[in-house]
Image (cartoon, rainbow, N blue to C red; front, side, top):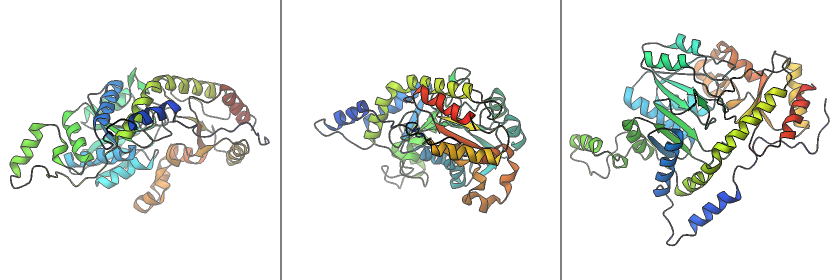
Length: 395
């Protein structure tokens, strides 16, 4: 095994906030009179800039990607009342939690290794007359879409929800992921491609969904809608209510702030160039890994890689333990299970609902035991990537 290197130090994320970002905040806060700090003009500006960058009509800025998930599934529940949402057990906890919170039924299917997202053939098997939506997660900067998935959604009138929290700027057929779905969600957590420290976005091309997202973001309060038609329709049914306080659904306060929006707007300047660097880093990593030990056949086309994906080619507990020991010895931070720690159905909150069902999803479970992610960020020195591969290949 390799001895510990004093100089390797490879964290999951180098600080994602720049001095220029801090200056944008101090300039904003130094204005006189003191600007409004809660949801206001800068939030609207960021929503507009983000929509233009993504290629959608509407965006609604919220306080986290998890909040975007929760509000999106609450909207699906509001529209359909009940039904099934297909997803995978592989991803962040907030995807499945949002389905559970909404009262809809999660239906699971396995992934494929090439995209780390839902397997198109498994998805087709899961479709029933009660399927209302597909919650598809683009994992760690890879595109998870295929044409068959899009065709199946259209054929069966299934609403595609894209979770793009880890894949800002990834593309499918040269179009940004997050612009295909009925609704898409993004996260601006401090370690992601673009950060507002905490924050998220709900995106759509459907005006009614946009209006619902605005209302649901702020307690379900009707006055947050900008549609005169929607307001009039509700108010005619409830003439006894104060028009300033009409709540159409029991939702939440998930607004973000002007400060978060100012930071995000400044970060937009470097998003595309940083994504190019991330993708180049991934190529170096995968091209230099030992293909007799590690899986490297991911679909890299259009990636905006968020973290290096490391997966043993064959199940080998001894090699797994060597990998983890050696990474720790060399100050290389990692997470086993890749996104979200692996198979979510093994987690306490799902095991009590689904028992041993986690065993059915072989690929999710394999990654749970024999997969990791390692930090990839624009500032990462190329020599460190080559050295990382050398260390892994020596095991």
